[in-house]
View 1 (cartoon, helix red, strand yellow):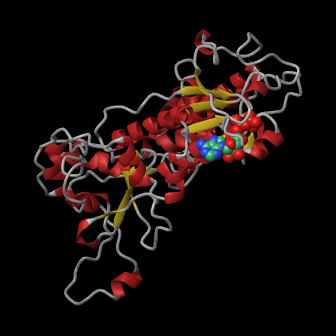
View 2 (cartoon, protein in one colour):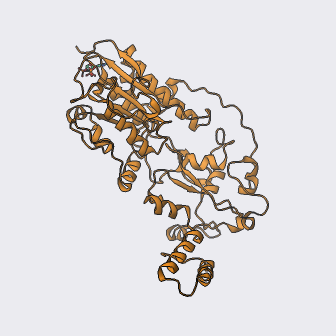
View 3 (cartoon, protein in one colour):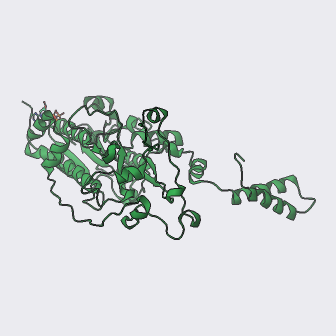
Length: 432
Ligand SMILES: Nc1ncnc2c1ncn2[C@@H]1O[C@H](COP(=O)(O)OP(=O)(O)OP(=O)(O)O)[C@@H](O)[C@H]1O
C-alpha cells in the first residue's frame, strides 16, 4: 500500500475478514486482504502503465495536451507569473495565463484554421518559445496568434489528447467534445461556421521546396542532380509533401512508408544522394530532433557518411558471425531509444551489401519495439527505409547477402528484402 486508499476498501477488507473462520491462519487472512486490495483499488491509467511496464508516462515519446472540457465554472486556470502580474496596467484584470482554449480562440484567420476543431488544433500545434529567433530562412514556420498570445508552429508528431473524465455532475446531459465543431459554442463561447470546403491543393513539389528549403546552396545542389539521382530524391520529396498535406488536412491519412534500394556502380553519386536526402529531411522536419538516421554495417562506412553503425544506432548486440539471437531492450533503455527516435521517419542504411538478412530482421524487430508497432502488420516500425550500395561490393561477414535466404525472422512470412525493397538505379558516373 503506497498511497491513501478509498474508505470503502477498509470496509471491504473488514467484511471479508469477518467472513473467515476464527481459527484461520495469518496466511489466509493476508491472502484475503491482498485479493480485496487488488480487486478494489482504484489505479489511474498512468500508475497502471508504470506498475506493469516500468515506463514513466512523463517520459513517453508523444507529448501530452490536456484540454479542460469541463463547464467554465469548473475549469481551473493558472495565474500569470509574479513578474507579469507586477507590470500589468491598472484596470487590466486578465490575470490568467492563456491555455489551449484561449489559444484556439485566437488562432489565425482563414483556412485551414477556420474549420479546424479544438482537438485538431491542440494536437497538431504547439506554442513557440517567446524568445525564439529563427536562425535560417528555412526554419519551421511560426504562425502568429491573435490578441498578442504569441506564436504557434506545426508539431512534427501528433500530441496525445487528455480530457477530464466526463461525469453527469461535470457535464450535465450534454458532454462537450473538442473534436466536434457544433459544440464549440458551448466550449469556447464561440460559434464556428461549418464551412469546411475543399482546400485547393495548389502545392507543387517545387513550391514545397521553396517554402521550406529556400537556402540557395541547397537549391543549387538539387538542381545539379542528374535524372537518375532525382528519382530517389523526388520519392522522398513526395513523401514529405504527403505528410505536409496530412498535417494541413488536405489529405485523409498519413502516407504509407516506403522501402527503396538505391544502387549504382562506383562514382554514380550514391553518397551524394544520401547527403541530399538527409539535408532535405532535416529541412522538412526542423524541430526538436532528427527525422533521418544514417547508419552503416561497419564503423568505417558509418564514419564516411557521418552516421552511426547499425548496432550503435539501434542498441543491438554485436554477433561477430555467431548469432546471439534477438535480445529485447530493458524498459529504461527502451524509453531512452523511444525519446531519441521520437521524430525519426526515415533510416538510410549505406553499404547494404554487407548487411545480412539476420541483421535486417534485427533492424525490423528493434524498430518495431521502439515505435511500438504491430510486428507482422507494420514493417520497420512504420519508418521509411532507404538501403544504399552495390551487391558487387563486399558481402556480410560469414553470412549470405540480404536478398538470399538466410537465418532471420520473416514477419508474417514476408521476406524483408525481396518482398519490400524497390530498386532505383543510378546510371551516370559523376566522378571526374
Ligand atoms: N549531381 C552531382 N553533381 C556534382 N557532383 C556530383 C554529383 N553526384 C556525384 N557527384 C560527385 O561525384 C563523385 C562521386 O560521387 P559519390 O562518392 O557520391 O559516388 P558513389 O556512388 O558513392 O561512389 P562509391 O561507390 O565509389 O563510393 C563525388 O565527388 C561527388 O561529389
